[in-house]
Length: 400
Ligand SMILES: Cc1cc2nc3c(=O)[nH]c(=O)nc-3n(C[C@H](O)[C@H](O)[C@H](O)COP(=O)(O)OP(=O)(O)OC[C@H]3O[C@@H](n4cnc5c(N)ncnc54)[C@H](O)[C@@H]3O)c2cc1C
Image (tube, rainbow, N blue to C red):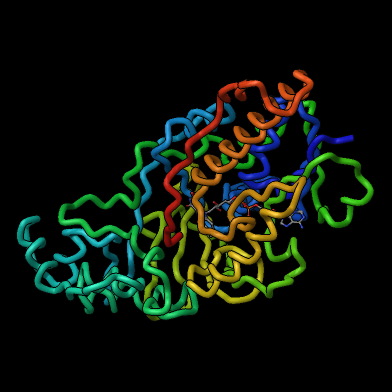
């Protein structure tokens, strides 16, 4: 008898498996319908011996010391500051837009103070910021919006920015200095030996059994377990009873080239002419030295594996109905990006899973206390404070 059947071996499922097994001595079966652990963060050495991310580039960054320290139990790190360029008007320029972007694009030599005035001049005032278009146009004006954001967003989401919640672009900063880092978080590193190695170490515990190539529906009737943790899509769990929640998917085209470098930056965005959104060259991310190089193109599409919940009001309304079912479902805990239908970064998912574990562990202790007292009122006993209960990170949406 397993204490928990965990569906999905991505960050949400694996962190919970590790915590329940190592922190609460629970017997855990974790299954994934894919042939590997790690969920979308899975990486592997390709046929050329180059470490690549199967489901597109995954850059770890966080402001949470707790999350960083927790993951540091399972990996060493390689310091890495991510940088992105955009191919616009025949030039390769920094994105997020900064002083160098404006100077290169318009052949100017403005200072930081002058570029501030430039942005003020081009920005279009907007009484109420509702959509992604409002966010960008009110910051950098319509021309830069058209060059960098409009078509990129249309490709990425299949929708015009005016149809998408403000949250999609609200975290894209504009800088008046020359800082060209993509993220400014306190902790920015990549797992030294890759994500999959980190997951292997997380799941390497005598209380954890891993079952791959296995849809939970094929085994849930045959394998005895007390409770389930579900990290797959919430609409699938409830047999689409309120309809399909829209997700955006991607097709990844991986290539290896007989040259040591392919492009001038880890990621180059292609907002306009091409049908792909960006190209990633993995050796920048991993620091691997190799005479050849591997890259991946991303082609957004509507059908396929669910990657990005689509942030629109009508979709939130459908999710709210599923959430009511979630709240009424006993014995199953829904955790993770697909189960909560929200774009979360890896660190946010780790925080969400640790918070969930804190709740489970605290609740179990309370139940045990009540049980041992032989009465139902608790007699003033409180659950012990949990060593890994988190307040959670700010759950904001991002573009990638
Ligand atoms: C292209 C792309 C780039 C990203 N880049 C970054 C980045 O740079 N930085 C960052 O912080 N975050 C990034 N993310 C987000 C990151 O991937 C997620 O935060 C993280 O993977 C979420 O973990 P999860 O466990 O919730 O979901 P997942 O990793 O999706 O894991 C869920 C697992 O459940 C399994 N599953 C589903 N249904 C079933 C079933 N019926 N039976 C068995 N198994 C099932 C799936 O196969 C999957 O492996 C990116 C995401 C994408 C798509």
